[in-house]
Image (cartoon, rainbow, N blue to C red; front, top):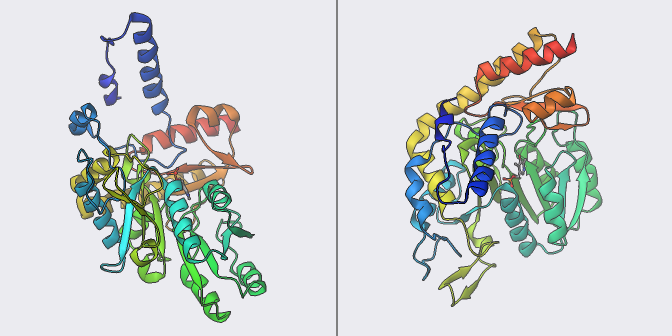
Length: 382
Ligand SMILES: *Cc1c(COP(=O)(O)O)cnc(C)c1O
Protein backbone atom coordinates (compact mmCIF):
# COMPACT_ATOMS: atom_id res chain seq x y z
CA UNK A 1 0.00 0.00 0.00
CA UNK A 2 1.07 3.52 -0.82
CA UNK A 3 0.68 4.81 2.71
CA UNK A 4 3.33 2.39 3.90
CA UNK A 5 5.99 4.87 2.88
CA UNK A 6 4.78 7.12 5.72
CA UNK A 7 6.15 4.81 8.37
CA UNK A 8 9.35 6.27 9.78
CA UNK A 9 12.46 4.10 9.67
CA UNK A 10 13.63 5.42 12.97
CA UNK A 11 12.22 7.38 15.86
CA UNK A 12 15.04 9.78 16.50
CA UNK A 13 14.02 11.63 19.65
CA UNK A 14 13.24 8.69 21.93
CA UNK A 15 15.52 6.10 23.44
CA UNK A 16 15.80 2.98 21.23
CA UNK A 17 13.37 0.85 23.29
CA UNK A 18 10.68 3.49 23.35
CA UNK A 19 11.37 4.24 19.71
CA UNK A 20 10.81 0.59 18.84
CA UNK A 21 7.65 0.51 20.92
CA UNK A 22 6.28 3.47 18.97
CA UNK A 23 7.41 2.09 15.63
CA UNK A 24 5.75 -1.24 16.38
CA UNK A 25 2.53 0.52 17.18
CA UNK A 26 2.63 2.57 13.98
CA UNK A 27 3.42 -0.51 11.89
CA UNK A 28 0.65 -2.50 13.48
CA UNK A 29 -1.84 0.30 12.86
CA UNK A 30 -0.93 0.40 9.17
CA UNK A 31 -1.08 -3.38 9.00
CA UNK A 32 -4.55 -3.52 10.54
CA UNK A 33 -5.67 -0.71 8.26
CA UNK A 34 -5.30 -3.08 5.31
CA UNK A 35 -8.31 -5.09 6.43
CA UNK A 36 -10.78 -2.52 7.55
CA UNK A 37 -14.24 -2.72 6.03
CA UNK A 38 -16.51 -3.16 9.05
CA UNK A 39 -16.71 0.33 10.50
CA UNK A 40 -18.24 3.41 8.89
CA UNK A 41 -15.23 5.61 8.37
CA UNK A 42 -13.88 7.13 5.17
CA UNK A 43 -10.36 6.07 4.26
CA UNK A 44 -9.57 8.33 1.35
CA UNK A 45 -8.42 11.42 3.21
CA UNK A 46 -5.00 13.03 3.26
CA UNK A 47 -4.46 15.97 5.55
CA UNK A 48 -0.67 16.08 5.37
CA UNK A 49 -0.77 19.73 4.34
CA UNK A 50 -2.03 20.48 7.84
CA UNK A 51 0.99 19.01 9.64
CA UNK A 52 2.35 22.43 10.72
CA UNK A 53 -0.72 22.80 12.94
CA UNK A 54 0.56 19.97 15.13
CA UNK A 55 3.20 22.29 16.53
CA UNK A 56 0.77 24.70 18.15
CA UNK A 57 -1.33 24.52 21.34
CA UNK A 58 -4.53 25.28 19.48
CA UNK A 59 -7.87 25.29 21.25
CA UNK A 60 -11.42 26.31 20.29
CA UNK A 61 -12.57 26.64 23.89
CA UNK A 62 -16.15 27.83 24.34
CA UNK A 63 -18.76 29.15 21.94
CA UNK A 64 -17.62 29.14 18.29
CA UNK A 65 -19.73 32.20 17.48
CA UNK A 66 -18.11 34.45 20.05
CA UNK A 67 -14.45 35.38 19.98
CA UNK A 68 -12.37 34.26 22.92
CA UNK A 69 -9.33 35.74 24.65
CA UNK A 70 -7.71 32.41 23.73
CA UNK A 71 -6.88 33.55 20.23
CA UNK A 72 -4.99 30.45 19.03
CA UNK A 73 -8.12 28.95 17.58
CA UNK A 74 -9.81 28.01 14.33
CA UNK A 75 -13.20 29.55 15.18
CA UNK A 76 -13.55 31.38 11.87
CA UNK A 77 -12.88 28.11 10.01
CA UNK A 78 -15.21 26.24 12.34
CA UNK A 79 -17.89 28.80 11.53
CA UNK A 80 -17.48 28.16 7.79
CA UNK A 81 -17.93 24.42 8.34
CA UNK A 82 -21.01 25.05 10.47
CA UNK A 83 -22.36 27.36 7.80
CA UNK A 84 -21.84 24.70 5.12
CA UNK A 85 -23.84 22.16 7.13
CA UNK A 86 -26.50 24.68 8.14
CA UNK A 87 -27.12 25.20 4.43
CA UNK A 88 -26.95 21.49 3.65
CA UNK A 89 -29.46 20.69 6.41
CA UNK A 90 -31.65 23.69 5.52
CA UNK A 91 -31.42 25.28 8.95
CA UNK A 92 -33.68 28.32 9.41
CA UNK A 93 -31.77 31.40 8.34
CA UNK A 94 -30.46 33.47 11.26
CA UNK A 95 -31.88 30.95 13.68
CA UNK A 96 -29.31 28.23 13.92
CA UNK A 97 -26.36 27.55 16.12
CA UNK A 98 -23.93 24.69 16.46
CA UNK A 99 -20.39 23.59 17.11
CA UNK A 100 -17.89 20.96 16.13
CA UNK A 101 -18.00 18.16 18.65
CA UNK A 102 -15.83 15.19 19.50
CA UNK A 103 -18.23 12.94 17.61
CA UNK A 104 -21.81 11.96 16.99
CA UNK A 105 -22.36 10.89 20.60
CA UNK A 106 -21.58 14.38 21.92
CA UNK A 107 -23.88 15.89 19.30
CA UNK A 108 -26.65 13.57 20.44
CA UNK A 109 -26.03 14.58 24.03
CA UNK A 110 -26.26 18.23 23.05
CA UNK A 111 -29.50 17.78 21.11
CA UNK A 112 -31.09 15.96 24.02
CA UNK A 113 -29.73 18.57 26.46
CA UNK A 114 -31.38 21.38 24.52
CA UNK A 115 -34.60 19.33 24.35
CA UNK A 116 -34.54 18.82 28.11
CA UNK A 117 -34.06 22.54 28.78
CA UNK A 118 -37.16 23.16 26.66
CA UNK A 119 -39.20 20.25 28.03
CA UNK A 120 -37.88 19.10 31.40
CA UNK A 121 -40.89 16.79 31.77
CA UNK A 122 -40.59 15.41 28.24
CA UNK A 123 -40.35 11.71 27.43
CA UNK A 124 -37.70 10.55 24.98
CA UNK A 125 -38.93 8.00 22.44
CA UNK A 126 -36.38 5.97 20.54
CA UNK A 127 -36.32 2.67 18.73
CA UNK A 128 -34.60 -0.46 19.93
CA UNK A 129 -32.18 -0.19 16.98
CA UNK A 130 -30.83 3.10 18.33
CA UNK A 131 -27.12 3.70 18.96
CA UNK A 132 -25.88 3.02 22.50
CA UNK A 133 -24.93 6.67 23.03
CA UNK A 134 -28.60 7.62 23.32
CA UNK A 135 -29.35 5.46 26.34
CA UNK A 136 -26.28 6.79 28.10
CA UNK A 137 -27.14 10.39 27.24
CA UNK A 138 -30.70 9.93 28.51
CA UNK A 139 -29.26 8.55 31.72
CA UNK A 140 -26.85 11.47 32.08
CA UNK A 141 -29.66 13.96 31.53
CA UNK A 142 -31.98 12.10 33.88
CA UNK A 143 -34.73 12.11 31.27
CA UNK A 144 -37.67 9.76 31.09
CA UNK A 145 -37.64 7.51 28.05
CA UNK A 146 -39.51 4.72 26.32
CA UNK A 147 -38.05 2.26 23.84
CA UNK A 148 -40.15 1.61 20.75
CA UNK A 149 -40.05 -1.56 18.68
CA UNK A 150 -38.25 -1.51 15.38
CA UNK A 151 -39.00 -3.66 12.35
CA UNK A 152 -36.55 -6.24 11.11
CA UNK A 153 -34.83 -3.73 8.84
CA UNK A 154 -34.17 -1.48 11.82
CA UNK A 155 -36.75 1.24 11.16
CA UNK A 156 -38.97 2.37 14.02
CA UNK A 157 -42.40 0.72 14.22
CA UNK A 158 -44.80 3.66 13.73
CA UNK A 159 -47.80 1.74 15.06
CA UNK A 160 -46.00 0.94 18.28
CA UNK A 161 -44.87 4.58 18.49
CA UNK A 162 -48.44 5.83 18.01
CA UNK A 163 -49.84 3.49 20.65
CA UNK A 164 -47.24 4.32 23.25
CA UNK A 165 -47.45 8.07 22.63
CA UNK A 166 -51.21 7.93 22.89
CA UNK A 167 -50.87 6.62 26.42
CA UNK A 168 -48.70 9.61 27.37
CA UNK A 169 -50.43 12.37 25.45
CA UNK A 170 -50.16 14.86 28.28
CA UNK A 171 -46.34 14.68 28.27
CA UNK A 172 -44.13 16.61 25.82
CA UNK A 173 -42.45 14.38 23.22
CA UNK A 174 -38.70 14.29 22.65
CA UNK A 175 -38.34 12.17 19.54
CA UNK A 176 -35.01 10.62 18.73
CA UNK A 177 -35.04 9.81 15.02
CA UNK A 178 -32.37 7.61 13.50
CA UNK A 179 -31.00 8.74 10.18
CA UNK A 180 -29.17 5.54 9.57
CA UNK A 181 -29.07 3.04 12.44
CA UNK A 182 -25.73 1.60 13.43
CA UNK A 183 -26.29 -1.98 12.32
CA UNK A 184 -28.54 -1.73 9.25
CA UNK A 185 -28.56 2.00 8.36
CA UNK A 186 -32.34 2.18 8.66
CA UNK A 187 -33.94 5.61 8.61
CA UNK A 188 -36.88 6.71 10.72
CA UNK A 189 -39.23 8.87 8.67
CA UNK A 190 -39.81 12.14 10.51
CA UNK A 191 -42.70 13.04 8.22
CA UNK A 192 -44.53 9.94 9.46
CA UNK A 193 -43.59 10.82 13.03
CA UNK A 194 -44.96 14.34 12.60
CA UNK A 195 -48.18 12.87 11.23
CA UNK A 196 -48.52 10.97 14.51
CA UNK A 197 -48.02 14.22 16.47
CA UNK A 198 -50.86 15.77 14.46
CA UNK A 199 -53.11 12.76 14.85
CA UNK A 200 -52.66 12.75 18.62
CA UNK A 201 -52.75 16.56 18.83
CA UNK A 202 -49.35 16.64 20.54
CA UNK A 203 -48.31 20.28 20.57
CA UNK A 204 -45.12 20.11 22.61
CA UNK A 205 -42.61 18.13 20.64
CA UNK A 206 -38.94 18.14 19.76
CA UNK A 207 -37.19 16.04 17.13
CA UNK A 208 -33.50 15.28 17.37
CA UNK A 209 -32.00 13.46 14.39
CA UNK A 210 -29.13 11.13 15.11
CA UNK A 211 -27.64 11.48 11.66
CA UNK A 212 -24.15 10.46 12.81
CA UNK A 213 -23.84 7.75 10.22
CA UNK A 214 -25.84 8.72 7.15
CA UNK A 215 -26.64 12.42 7.58
CA UNK A 216 -23.98 13.92 5.36
CA UNK A 217 -24.36 11.79 2.25
CA UNK A 218 -28.14 11.52 2.62
CA UNK A 219 -28.41 15.30 2.53
CA UNK A 220 -25.86 15.64 -0.27
CA UNK A 221 -27.85 13.25 -2.45
CA UNK A 222 -31.25 14.35 -1.22
CA UNK A 223 -32.08 10.79 -0.23
CA UNK A 224 -35.56 9.96 1.05
CA UNK A 225 -36.93 10.13 3.66
CA UNK A 226 -35.72 13.68 4.23
CA UNK A 227 -34.76 14.66 7.76
CA UNK A 228 -33.45 18.23 7.63
CA UNK A 229 -34.77 21.28 9.48
CA UNK A 230 -37.38 21.91 6.80
CA UNK A 231 -38.74 18.42 7.31
CA UNK A 232 -39.10 19.19 11.01
CA UNK A 233 -35.81 18.44 12.76
CA UNK A 234 -35.09 20.66 15.76
CA UNK A 235 -31.50 19.49 16.05
CA UNK A 236 -29.18 17.28 14.02
CA UNK A 237 -25.94 15.54 14.98
CA UNK A 238 -23.43 14.00 12.59
CA UNK A 239 -20.02 12.38 12.91
CA UNK A 240 -17.18 13.99 10.97
CA UNK A 241 -14.84 11.01 10.91
CA UNK A 242 -17.37 8.81 9.12
CA UNK A 243 -18.30 10.00 5.62
CA UNK A 244 -16.10 13.11 5.57
CA UNK A 245 -13.13 11.35 7.10
CA UNK A 246 -10.68 12.43 9.78
CA UNK A 247 -7.70 10.96 11.64
CA UNK A 248 -9.28 12.26 14.86
CA UNK A 249 -12.88 11.49 15.78
CA UNK A 250 -15.09 14.53 15.37
CA UNK A 251 -18.65 15.56 14.67
CA UNK A 252 -21.00 18.46 14.42
CA UNK A 253 -24.27 19.46 16.02
CA UNK A 254 -26.77 22.03 14.80
CA UNK A 255 -29.74 23.31 16.78
CA UNK A 256 -32.29 26.06 16.36
CA UNK A 257 -30.73 29.12 17.95
CA UNK A 258 -33.76 30.24 19.94
CA UNK A 259 -33.71 26.89 21.76
CA UNK A 260 -30.03 27.02 22.53
CA UNK A 261 -30.21 30.53 23.92
CA UNK A 262 -31.38 29.01 27.20
CA UNK A 263 -27.95 27.48 27.64
CA UNK A 264 -24.58 28.98 28.44
CA UNK A 265 -23.09 31.44 30.87
CA UNK A 266 -20.55 34.17 30.29
CA UNK A 267 -17.18 32.98 31.59
CA UNK A 268 -14.77 35.87 32.12
CA UNK A 269 -11.76 33.53 32.23
CA UNK A 270 -12.14 32.48 28.58
CA UNK A 271 -13.85 35.68 27.49
CA UNK A 272 -16.64 33.80 25.75
CA UNK A 273 -19.82 31.85 26.45
CA UNK A 274 -19.76 28.35 27.91
CA UNK A 275 -22.36 26.88 25.58
CA UNK A 276 -20.63 23.64 24.60
CA UNK A 277 -20.44 20.28 26.41
CA UNK A 278 -16.66 20.16 26.66
CA UNK A 279 -14.71 23.24 27.66
CA UNK A 280 -11.50 23.04 25.68
CA UNK A 281 -12.34 21.88 22.19
CA UNK A 282 -10.37 20.49 19.30
CA UNK A 283 -9.05 23.15 16.94
CA UNK A 284 -7.79 20.63 14.40
CA UNK A 285 -10.97 18.76 13.58
CA UNK A 286 -12.77 21.85 12.22
CA UNK A 287 -9.75 22.41 9.97
CA UNK A 288 -9.89 18.79 8.77
CA UNK A 289 -13.56 19.11 7.95
CA UNK A 290 -13.07 22.46 6.27
CA UNK A 291 -10.18 21.13 4.20
CA UNK A 292 -12.26 18.16 3.06
CA UNK A 293 -15.21 20.34 2.10
CA UNK A 294 -12.98 22.72 0.15
CA UNK A 295 -10.94 19.99 -1.51
CA UNK A 296 -13.90 18.05 -2.85
CA UNK A 297 -16.47 20.79 -3.14
CA UNK A 298 -20.18 20.00 -3.22
CA UNK A 299 -19.91 18.27 -6.55
CA UNK A 300 -16.96 16.17 -5.54
CA UNK A 301 -18.63 15.12 -2.31
CA UNK A 302 -21.77 14.11 -4.19
CA UNK A 303 -19.67 12.00 -6.53
CA UNK A 304 -17.98 10.38 -3.55
CA UNK A 305 -21.40 9.57 -2.09
CA UNK A 306 -22.56 8.09 -5.40
CA UNK A 307 -19.42 5.95 -5.47
CA UNK A 308 -20.38 4.58 -2.06
CA UNK A 309 -23.86 3.67 -3.26
CA UNK A 310 -22.42 2.03 -6.34
CA UNK A 311 -20.02 0.05 -4.18
CA UNK A 312 -22.95 -1.09 -2.02
CA UNK A 313 -24.79 -2.36 -5.12
CA UNK A 314 -21.61 -4.14 -6.19
CA UNK A 315 -21.19 -5.68 -2.74
CA UNK A 316 -24.72 -7.09 -2.52
CA UNK A 317 -24.34 -8.56 -6.02
CA UNK A 318 -21.01 -10.07 -5.14
CA UNK A 319 -22.47 -11.70 -2.01
CA UNK A 320 -25.46 -13.04 -3.94
CA UNK A 321 -23.23 -14.51 -6.63
CA UNK A 322 -21.32 -16.25 -3.86
CA UNK A 323 -24.60 -17.67 -2.59
CA UNK A 324 -24.61 -15.55 0.57
CA UNK A 325 -27.83 -13.90 1.59
CA UNK A 326 -26.90 -10.21 1.89
CA UNK A 327 -29.18 -7.19 1.79
CA UNK A 328 -29.26 -3.44 2.37
CA UNK A 329 -31.89 -0.88 3.19
CA UNK A 330 -33.03 1.49 0.39
CA UNK A 331 -30.18 3.89 -0.52
CA UNK A 332 -28.00 2.49 2.24
CA UNK A 333 -24.27 1.91 1.97
CA UNK A 334 -24.39 -0.66 4.78
CA UNK A 335 -24.57 -4.25 3.54
CA UNK A 336 -25.89 -6.79 6.06
CA UNK A 337 -25.11 -10.51 5.94
CA UNK A 338 -25.11 -13.53 8.26
CA UNK A 339 -22.21 -13.43 10.73
CA UNK A 340 -19.01 -15.08 9.52
CA UNK A 341 -16.54 -16.99 11.72
CA UNK A 342 -14.70 -15.27 14.54
CA UNK A 343 -11.47 -15.59 12.56
CA UNK A 344 -12.83 -13.53 9.68
CA UNK A 345 -14.59 -11.12 11.98
CA UNK A 346 -11.33 -10.40 13.75
CA UNK A 347 -9.21 -10.18 10.63
CA UNK A 348 -11.60 -7.80 8.89
CA UNK A 349 -12.80 -5.98 12.04
CA UNK A 350 -16.41 -6.84 11.35
CA UNK A 351 -19.03 -5.79 13.93
CA UNK A 352 -21.73 -8.33 14.74
CA UNK A 353 -25.05 -8.23 16.55
CA UNK A 354 -27.76 -10.87 16.85
CA UNK A 355 -26.21 -13.12 14.25
CA UNK A 356 -25.73 -10.40 11.63
CA UNK A 357 -22.67 -8.55 10.47
CA UNK A 358 -22.16 -5.65 8.10
CA UNK A 359 -19.77 -4.06 5.67
CA UNK A 360 -19.99 -0.31 5.24
CA UNK A 361 -19.13 0.97 1.78
CA UNK A 362 -17.45 4.18 2.87
CA UNK A 363 -15.23 6.31 0.60
CA UNK A 364 -11.88 4.64 0.12
CA UNK A 365 -13.08 1.05 0.54
CA UNK A 366 -12.18 -0.72 -2.69
CA UNK A 367 -13.99 -3.31 -4.75
CA UNK A 368 -10.84 -5.42 -4.64
CA UNK A 369 -10.89 -5.51 -0.85
CA UNK A 370 -14.56 -6.44 -0.70
CA UNK A 371 -14.03 -9.12 -3.32
CA UNK A 372 -11.16 -10.55 -1.29
CA UNK A 373 -13.31 -10.66 1.83
CA UNK A 374 -16.15 -12.41 0.02
CA UNK A 375 -13.70 -14.93 -1.46
CA UNK A 376 -12.46 -15.75 2.04
CA UNK A 377 -16.02 -16.02 3.25
CA UNK A 378 -16.88 -18.35 0.37
CA UNK A 379 -13.94 -20.60 1.15
CA UNK A 380 -15.04 -20.73 4.74
CA UNK A 381 -18.56 -21.71 3.77
CA UNK A 382 -17.49 -24.60 1.51
C1 LIG B 1 -21.36 6.44 14.96
C2 LIG B 1 -22.72 6.66 15.46
C3 LIG B 1 -22.98 7.38 16.62
C4 LIG B 1 -21.89 7.87 17.53
O1 LIG B 1 -21.03 8.69 16.91
P1 LIG B 1 -19.52 8.83 17.42
O2 LIG B 1 -18.99 9.79 16.43
O3 LIG B 1 -18.91 7.48 17.41
O4 LIG B 1 -19.59 9.40 18.79
C5 LIG B 1 -24.28 7.60 16.98
N1 LIG B 1 -25.29 7.12 16.25
C6 LIG B 1 -25.09 6.42 15.12
C7 LIG B 1 -26.25 5.92 14.36
C8 LIG B 1 -23.79 6.15 14.69
O5 LIG B 1 -23.58 5.45 13.58
